[in-house]
Amino acid sequence: MGRILDISVPLHTGMVFYPGDTEPAIEPGKQISHGDTANLSEIRLGSHSGTHVDAPHHFIDGEATMDDMPLQSLVGTARVLDLTGVTGGIEAADLEAAGIRGEGSATGDQGAAGRILLKTRNSGLWADSGFHEDFIALGDSGADLAVELGLKLIANDYLSIERFHSETHYVHRRLLEAGIVILEGVDLRQVDAGDYELLCLPLRVRGGDGAPARAVLREL
Amino acid sequence: MGRILDISVPLHTGMVFYPGDTEPAIEPGKQISHGDTANLSEIRLGSHSGTHVDAPHHFIDGEATMDDMPLQSLVGTARVLDLTGVTGGIEAADLEAAGIRGEGSATGDQGAAGRILLKTRNSGLWADSGFHEDFIALGDSGADLAVELGLKLIANDYLSIERFHSETHYVHRRLLEAGIVILEGVDLRQVDAGDYELLCLPLRVRGGDGAPARAVLREL
Image (cartoon, rainbow over all chains, first blue to last red; front, side, top):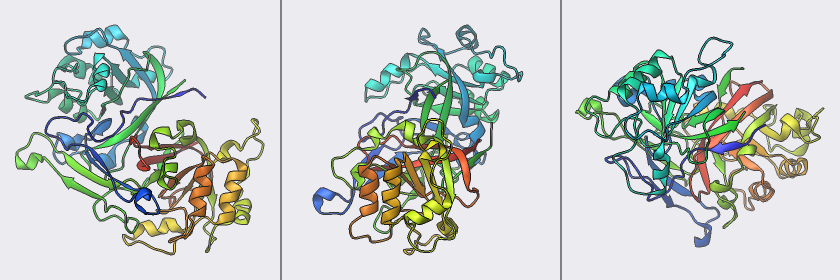
């Protein structure tokens, strides 16, 4: 069995978070050094802190919540696309050039390419605790192509898949309405383009609009 | 590929928690129904709320934290043992009778039985939001056997693997000192005894003494 590569960002007090969202904090509770029998801590996170999954209810009130996220979409073969040369929005032509289309799939569907992770120059921003508004985001035509191809999941390497202060949230809405799982906030610095098995398991938050997740790639 | 069975307990305000630990709460933040552009929530959990993993640092100050948890122990073949007939502590003889020993493993190690999930009558307690002090726990000889067999991981179906108000915390210390991952708080009501692939991914909490996890079993 291949190596397991952690693509989750560490959770800690002081970590970068999306402006306006809950500031993550990990606080000590009981402490052995203070005479307690065990170390315990309190974890305070926004539903979209760090590496996380969006539920449709995040942008479409009353739609599916974290209870309804399909585990079969969150776990399975996946393709990392190298988009580190893209400096603006990621459009359909960029995805095509990077190899988004499944090839030779016996099942006729997207095969390994049914789950796509967008590796961009954003991954380098994790080294900085400040939020960068000019991150690389998926463009409208990129979202259209993801829907056309029937992707199960699409992931990107910063805290939102859509450009900062979008007026319409077209990208989120288009993907979520199509039932495509959005995984945001992965760190792909140490991962080469290619095919892997993705294991993405968000916390099971009842009624959640989103939830922090641990995501790893297993080499095939 | 087999079905994926969710063995994580849902996280919600009002859920059962270990006495003295942080009370879990999921609070609404921004809300579309209040004129916001998206739904966001705040998640407050103890490091040992619901389905979770213990790090050695939980009981052994300064030892390995969640950063150091071996992904290769958290993911791989696993065996669910039926211990629903046990009414006291789970001792070595109970584990032997339930089939803890790996058989026919080509690698000479425990094979599928390298990760063990203890299915007990505790799983029925998840239907109740109150904490039950008399849950079924792993006994000292059971922990000794787990160490002797060189298990990678051991899981149980209530909020602690050790009896309530243990004076010595022998079971925790014995397992953690041996580098065996402890996964607590899984719900095995819907799972039959047998071999599966376990996918257990705790949040990547920097320096954490433990962390909430999503855990699933994939049918082989």
